[in-house]
Image 1: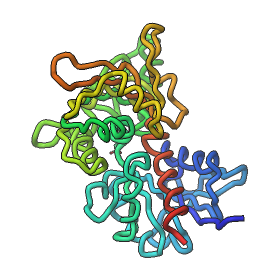
Image 2 (image 1 turned 45 degrees about the vertical axis):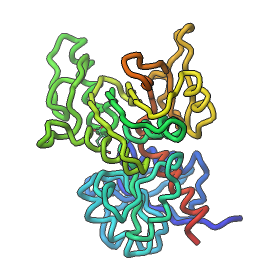
Image 3 (image 1 turned 60 degrees about the vertical axis):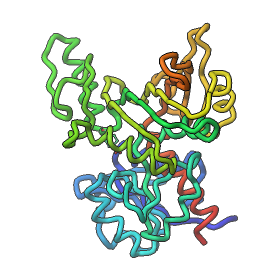
Image 4 (image 1 turned 30 degrees about the vertical axis):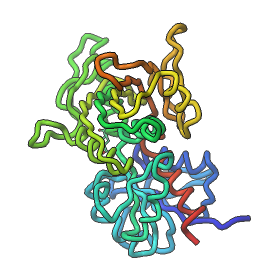
Length: 339
Ligand code: L14
């Protein structure tokens, strides 16, 4: 039997934390001891791991003794405070928040795109998991970039409520129920009603008029792809529970035909091409929820410029956009780097 690793899941009771646990189970990650950590509010809950009960403990600075790998999904504030403690205890922290993503000493990793960057984990003992919308976009674009060199990306996102967490999933469910019963919908998590609506705001606005979510796509894409690509984004919340969709327009240096793009995407890691418009076949969030791949369809030439292409990219934001990506990083970490 190979070596077993002691794993802590921080934010274990959250939507992403629970999915991380499920991914560890599904992928048969070689777990020795498992530890579930969460805020004071959730401590005391019992969750399972492979059929055995595990108590959720309160996250503290000394929670990480004897832990090898921490899967962290408890928000930026907690990540800023507790990832360094985990690293000091000798663990490697894979953090899902935006807290460490743009730190020069922290690798920002999508295994299909820049697995080599994992080597940089030694600098701070932290690896960042990118933003959900960024992950699925770079998985789809990397093979196209390697062939034709992408100069510019224009992306619009259609993001599910699950990205915000349990309360937002509940909010959409309750609003739909209330409205169908002729009662008014109350908005608490989002600034406006999300049921039967679209909100052109994800996260807060910055001084340039873009939201933080939009700017994450700009900066994170460049860091992961290791290229000075121009990126401009519009991030929109839609009344979908699971699965982010993206309309992506790229301008390339070299000509990239639809046929060539399809060929590249057919053999690309982590991608599934779902593109047969004569039979009305294209990816949709309802179909991809629960799956780990990034689905691409609606590939067509942008006839308004010389070298342009349009694509439709869909993935499960809680899986590939968060938990699966983090566990994939952990798999490479133990296979190549940890001893
Ligand atoms: O940077 O959908 O990971 O509200 C956190 C908020 C992803 C989107 C991040 C949402 C974001 C999420």
